Image (cartoon, rainbow, N blue to C red; front, side, top):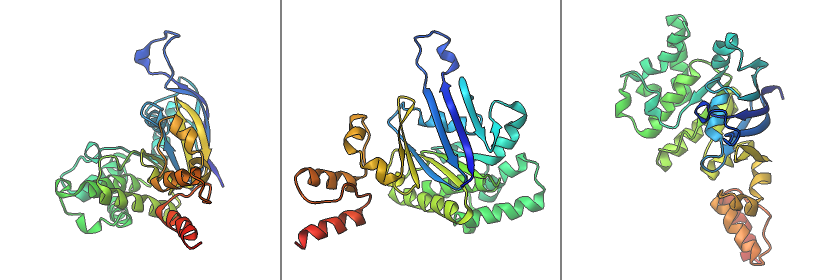
Length: 283
């Protein structure tokens, strides 16, 4: 796989903290490589540095020390800012913070217009983006009349229309009901599988994290775990010591295994949990 994002020994301290050596860094020596086309979930408790890291990926924040490279371009290079933000799109937690127009198709077109793209090409991109998130039929609607999940899909479409190679989503389902979360996660998976868009998902929902190819756990601004969902969520007790949840199915099987039942080391979802329990019940 082609390496796309390189995060090299990154430390970050907010400017308002001043230069007092007693002030804490929000990011403490982050080293990560993310390949093109990967689906990566980043989890961690509040204050672990998840959102701060996300905003480093399209130059909203710059490292205090260390470097972030996007397709070989250093985010500290002002001359590369435009190119970096074309490659990496950021979707925020609250879709209302990204919706700027009174008609869906106009909103999706907004980013492309800022890039100076020809109107004919914009129209083509807008329609393709709306189809990609299954919102084409709402192109003439007002965003105010849409559900939370639909608004978030419109926000994602606005990023897709700019044709980035990577989409960073900062807790995009935090304000949504279960149906809205399912709609958005289905859209994210589809974009990753069908268009090979690199996806970096910041989430509090462990059931969402298990859908990724790779899970990165942050704790106090450092990388605590980095591996496949099965490798990471097998570490139930270390995760709980750091105030992190695991998927409910994983926790149930872990508890029963601790009670002496012969169960797998780690299950990730309800289906795996049911199959594991059925094997015991059939004995």
